[in-house]
Image (cartoon, rainbow, N blue to C red; front, side):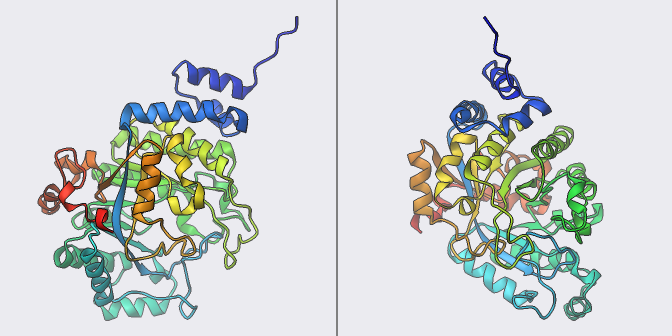
Length: 400
């Protein structure tokens, strides 16, 4: 009788059943798991999540502050960045930042998420003139100043995503941000080629982004990173990217969350005709991320990018929904509104999980003084329970 030879997917699923962590080749194979065998992959990832994170799924109540839409990079998938004079091009004044932050604070937000283009002063004279008008030479210096104003005048805890940073930049921002982040997106250098996703994007060179993540680790900054799927990378490159993140976390222990973000085509971007990753592709990638990164990593996928199917994501090992705002849209994906908290809670609980609010700094870092700047420690400790989650009496979202 002929013996059927096991396929790479068969062998990888067998190793999962034995409780083993997949190697790079096996993880790559698992990203092609067919639909009829997908439950085996998802069950293994969910069991690993339950072992480390239990049945609790978190989110952060935030206000999204798009400090500037100007950016020196021209990524093929981005609808956020603008050139001066284009519709939607702006840089917020300090008064505008504070007004938005105060409005969010009144609604019970805890996090001020600062998103902005990368070093627009390098190519735009208009932005250099704006910076001079507010007393700064660099966008990162301006970000530091408005982060401090928001912290002191509204009580919101800033989290900044400003792109590449030097050690000095990180150390300065650490004093007024409870956490920071930069999406690795991909380790693929192929995406820098002419016509590819990161053509004309000097800040998307993988080694430069990995260096920023490492610098944050050396400074004990709770750090967010992640990958963007569907932008031209191969399955092997997705795995390579996740393993690069794992290696940095093993070295420094500072990566507080890994985001699996799916590309969404938009009519105004160069990649408008690219296909979106399908829902099963996202599920497989979240599951493989869980299996590679282990039971204790916080793994997030934004619910607004999965339309009506986001309630399937917990089954893949996810344990965080990311930031949800009662006030501001997702300025990166403005056509994709966040779900209401009542609906998110209903779907989360229907999937057998508890929904809890966290700060911009995850619970396991909120309770470790070494990861919080001294001037921020009292603010953080007053806002959390002994386990590092937002105190129940401060969970205003339950009234939204």
